[in-house]
Length: 476
Image 1 (cartoon, rainbow, N blue to C red):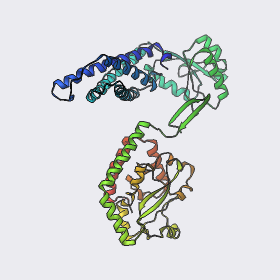
Image 2: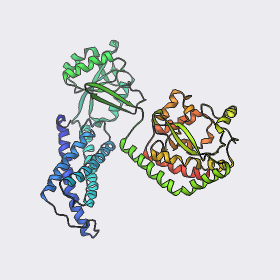
Image 3: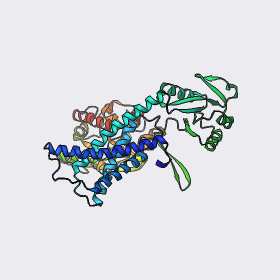
Image 4: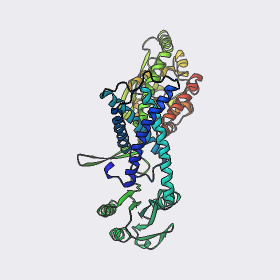
């Protein structure tokens, strides 16, 4: 919390407040200069009134509160400059939104949108300079011996060795290792990478009194919870900061949150990195692109429907019963490209299945209609699924959704592909989906997408999908 911060954090908060205030004032003069230059960004003259100064004070205070919310004033020694800049952009974005809201409620409806626009970029520029400057100044000061932390490491295993190496490689973190405590009494007195093992960690109270560390770094396995409790209690009683470099979470989790709900300590594990803002952008992309595609491709949809109707009658669409996000059964629709009794004939063709695992694939499937071969070659049969994208059941980019009966045969590790929303295209599409005959390889591509997901990756997949569809590469 802001009122519990150290002197350095308070100093940074005051600096951020002043930077925001200066940014708003500077934005006004930039804005006026642009008007003088004849850019006509401002339709009417904008008068500065006394309540605008109150707005600046309120907005500057809000910026500091938001930066605190994004942990900008928490432990900065391990925080990268990029992370700090991202937090700045988030805070400024929300500050500008609140500024617009405040202006509306106090009746200042003449506040030009162009000024708000200029303010955002001016503030972003000033904060980038400020944060970059402070980041390197702090690193230089720590390198010269100022603002350093004296720490003791609990544990002498692999995790402790890795931590010591990182501290040595990053002297600007400002961490001075005083020594280590061990769980093996035979190691007492030995050295680890030049640092002495003082004692057994059962004697941590004595060590705290003798050495007076500022922080304790725990690197022992959390399987020893009984011993951890003793260490944590000793540090709590002494008022010493504790940090846990744990193997408890392994490499499975992407995000861990700890909440206190009505006195209950709840730890939540997310096995996929989720960024609400990026997910919002992804959803907006889905809606916009799906809507535009349906409008532009409506002639293709109509011609395909007519062709199927003429060649094999109704139904035109195939009811696709699949499993969606979080393993919830959903229904989507595709153009019917096979004979009407295709599902019944599939049982007779199972012996010709070319795909290992629960999915089915056969070359020159006899169930496919003549017009269906053309429709499938260019993935036209997938187009009705754009309505499912608009609805929110599917995404444009995501793992291929399995049929409901296929999902029942999935191995446990294969089910992880459904921790995200399934999609119309993914890595398997641009990798030549019909070159993959092992279902495990298919799932590995989906998991690779999940573990490396970003908006940029989605964009790359969408771009690469276009030539794959138009050339009919890898389709049957």
